[in-house]
Each structure stands twice: as structure tokens, then as C-alpha cells.
Length: 336
Figure (cartoon, rainbow, N blue to C red):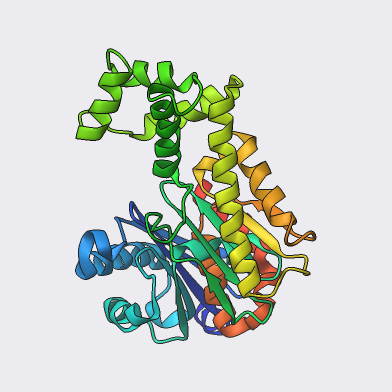
């Protein structure tokens, strides 16, 4: 059998993860073998515009095709998880930006927060709870069609908190409560004073209010550090975050009627690495509603989920029988 003939008999699938800082593309075969990978720049159209998104997708896709030694026509199914694709009314606009890639195959678009479901769950259904720079929660029913979701971390009006910025703000509230005597003293106060360089709490509070001091990522890490030292107020911030994330998951579980199912809840994002109390509180909150829930900490590249979604377009639920193979070979490919 010639190599060209073998190529024609093998089906290939594409996954793309387009995020706010980078874009990844992964090509896998119908046996779950990862054969091509590429990277591009930021892919969130809200930050770089539709043309910028197209450029990032094209750069990553072209590099993956080159590594795999394939042409666009070899791709028989595609899954794309894109930051900034939030509502159905945006679908046609996003499809227009994807069109220059030249894909002529079934494809599906999801928000990038949903990729954890495809990559992290056993059968392609369950819940994904993201806590990193921001927070989000998405879900998928057992029929692999029904979707559940929250608004998407709008916080001030949607009631969805527990991303990094929210965590720092909640900790700052504990500092403010010490200053104005609404709450007890907390080790967060001297820690934040040291970080900011403020001379006292009045200077810190005033400086945050007028923008002289910014609650950047250093304050997030400091909350975890102070919590690890046993400060009650810092620990309470983490319990609050865990409850918020757990309640988001509970809402999506109710939407999908999974309360009495062994639903898999995938935890994605850097904040889960900060202190175990946040995830423990999340789990307690979810298990009060769904006692059979199982929790999975998934830290592999989300583009694996996009590739499995691409495989699903042709293989259906059978794609998830190859999940472990895709994870294994994708890891080998990226490590090279």
C-alpha cells in the first residue's frame, strides 16, 4: 500500500483552543494519535478583533498541518473552543472569521470554558468549573447535546465570582473591614501593606480607591500564602470562593437534571493550585445537591478537548473511547 493511499484511508480531526493570550491547534487521527501541533497569538476577538482572531487561528492551524504533513482537505471534523464566543447570536460572525481556514468538514464551536468537559470527563458529558484570571461554568447533558451554563463571570450583575480578581477584591474587603472596625484584625492587612508599600491602612484604602495601588496577581498569591499560615479571614476568603464556584456548578447541574447522576465535575484553572480549601468547599457545596458527583482536576492543554470535539463530529460518542490515547500522544507530541 502506498503512503498516499494510506493517507486517504485515515481520517484526521482538528481541535483549536483560541484564548486571550495564545491559540493552540492539534490534529489527531481516527485512532487517537496526535500528529500535528501549532501555536498562534491571542485568539479572543474581543481583544484582537475578528481579523486578529483569524490570523491567530490560521497561524496555529498552518503550523499543525505542516507538522502532520497534511493538507486542509484531510481534516474531516473540527472542534473549536474560542474565548469571546459567548452567545448563539455571535455564531455566524465567528464562523465568518473561521471561513478563511478553508475547512470543508463538520465543525462545532464552543466557548473555551467548555473544553474541560470534552478533555476531562469519561464520556464527554459533565460540568466544567474554571477559576483562573476569571471564572466560568459550563455543562453538557448525557445526550451530548443539551448545554448548561452561567452568564460567564460578569460578577457585578450576574453574581458569578471567584476568579483571581474577585479573590483579591474579597481579601481587600477583609482589610477594609479591619480598618473601619466592621471586622476583626487579619494578617492580610500587614501582608497587603508590605506588597503595596503603603505607609498605613488609611493610605492603602485611599490608594486602592483612587487607583494609586492596583490589586494585581501578587495579591492573589499573597491570599493563599496568608491562608496557609492559618489566618481566619484569609481562610474565609477561600471558603467564600469555593462556595461561589460550587453554587455556579449546582445551577448548571440543575439545568441539566444531573442531581442524581454520577456527574463528573472538571476543575480547571490556576487558582485551584493555591490552597486545597477552595476546592474542598466547592466539593462540599456540590455534593449537597449531587451526592454522586466525582471531581477531576484537569491540567492538560485544553486543546485536547477541542480535538475530541472535532472527532465527535464524525465518530459520535465513540470519540471518548479514544480520550486517554489522545491525552497520551498529545503529551508526547508537545514534549517533543
